[in-house]
Image (cartoon, rainbow, N blue to C red; front, side, top):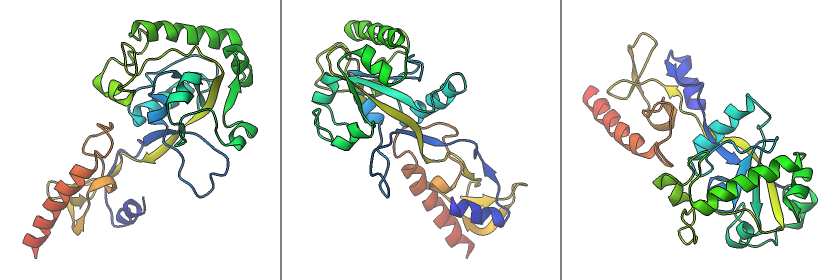
Length: 262
């Protein structure tokens, strides 16, 4: 963001600064000085769902990190969801990594001690720890289990797109690679937050990659590309690393223009 702020001092125009590239994350003990974990790959695996603080499922979990966090923030305008819950069962913990740890329920003890990871023998008991009505979470899980068995998510179409299936488990034995029942205890819950990565906003540039002012005139000698500029894809993410191609392309355009200008 510092380069954006510096260019603004020289009169640069900006756009899309009300947008952000989000990333679902969680809070673990002893995280000071460490990167927050990226939870997209975790929540996209079978045997887990995301629910709000009332116990309702409200999104397609196998989706881009940006779409997941957008869904969380949109949901929070209706009901508390600025932290949501990742609900999973023993099948999930037995097969998949969680926050970068190897599969299995043997997680750092301070995760349990500091309630970063909750554990209970039943969904109802887990719901009580999450301060969710037990009957509500039980109904949500049972509805999802029906979708997992049929291979069709009738509520949010999870697994209905190649990207979602890719995020799942290619070795999962089921009609969908991202849908799996949550029915084998113990059961687990972890808070999810709408973390961030970067922004879709930035400096406005012209066809020569020159930074322009609000009136469209170019600022001589000032070029920008990549995440310093307003995204060429607008207010959406087409996938991880989507800024790399435009960075190289517009860097090449900028270099050619700068050389021709000297």
